[in-house]
Length: 72
Image 1 (tube, rainbow, N blue to C red):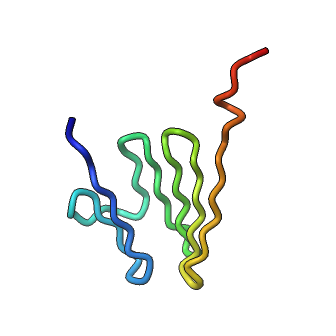
Image 2: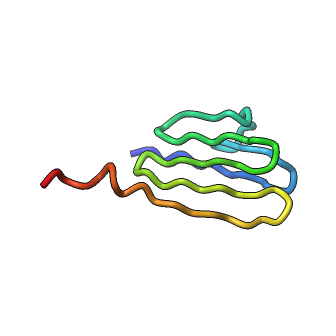
Protein backbone atom coordinates (compact mmCIF):
# COMPACT_ATOMS: atom_id res chain seq x y z
CA UNK A 1 0.00 0.00 0.00
CA UNK A 2 1.24 3.45 -0.87
CA UNK A 3 2.08 5.81 1.97
CA UNK A 4 1.60 9.56 1.98
CA UNK A 5 3.99 11.98 3.67
CA UNK A 6 2.77 15.18 5.31
CA UNK A 7 5.45 17.64 6.46
CA UNK A 8 4.66 20.82 8.39
CA UNK A 9 7.36 23.49 8.58
CA UNK A 10 6.18 25.52 11.58
CA UNK A 11 8.77 28.30 11.29
CA UNK A 12 8.15 28.95 7.58
CA UNK A 13 4.43 28.13 8.00
CA UNK A 14 4.41 25.79 5.02
CA UNK A 15 2.66 22.48 4.52
CA UNK A 16 3.90 19.81 2.12
CA UNK A 17 2.12 16.64 1.06
CA UNK A 18 4.24 14.10 -0.81
CA UNK A 19 6.91 16.84 -1.31
CA UNK A 20 4.42 19.28 -2.88
CA UNK A 21 3.21 22.52 -1.33
CA UNK A 22 -0.37 22.28 -0.03
CA UNK A 23 -2.76 25.03 1.06
CA UNK A 24 -3.01 25.63 4.82
CA UNK A 25 -6.55 24.22 4.92
CA UNK A 26 -5.72 20.61 4.07
CA UNK A 27 -8.27 17.81 4.30
CA UNK A 28 -7.40 14.49 2.73
CA UNK A 29 -6.63 10.87 3.64
CA UNK A 30 -8.77 11.35 6.79
CA UNK A 31 -6.50 14.10 8.13
CA UNK A 32 -7.38 17.76 8.56
CA UNK A 33 -4.74 20.47 9.03
CA UNK A 34 -5.81 24.07 9.53
CA UNK A 35 -3.71 27.20 10.18
CA UNK A 36 -5.61 29.57 12.51
CA UNK A 37 -2.92 32.26 12.40
CA UNK A 38 -1.71 31.42 15.92
CA UNK A 39 -1.41 27.66 15.61
CA UNK A 40 -1.93 24.61 13.46
CA UNK A 41 -4.93 22.46 14.33
CA UNK A 42 -4.35 18.87 13.28
CA UNK A 43 -6.94 16.08 13.42
CA UNK A 44 -6.25 12.47 12.54
CA UNK A 45 -8.78 9.85 11.40
CA UNK A 46 -8.37 8.02 14.73
CA UNK A 47 -9.41 11.00 16.86
CA UNK A 48 -5.99 12.43 17.72
CA UNK A 49 -6.09 16.24 17.99
CA UNK A 50 -2.95 18.40 18.03
CA UNK A 51 -2.67 22.14 18.60
CA UNK A 52 0.80 23.31 17.50
CA UNK A 53 1.55 26.93 18.38
CA UNK A 54 3.61 28.97 15.88
CA UNK A 55 5.35 31.29 18.36
CA UNK A 56 6.48 28.79 21.01
CA UNK A 57 6.42 25.42 19.25
CA UNK A 58 4.37 24.04 22.13
CA UNK A 59 2.05 21.15 21.28
CA UNK A 60 -1.18 20.24 23.00
CA UNK A 61 -2.16 16.65 22.18
CA UNK A 62 -5.63 15.34 22.92
CA UNK A 63 -7.21 11.99 22.17
CA UNK A 64 -10.92 11.66 21.64
CA UNK A 65 -11.39 8.09 22.82
CA UNK A 66 -14.98 8.62 23.96
CA UNK A 67 -16.26 8.16 20.40
CA UNK A 68 -14.37 4.84 20.14
CA UNK A 69 -15.92 3.28 23.26
CA UNK A 70 -18.34 0.43 22.85
CA UNK A 71 -21.84 0.89 24.27
CA UNK A 72 -22.48 -0.95 27.54
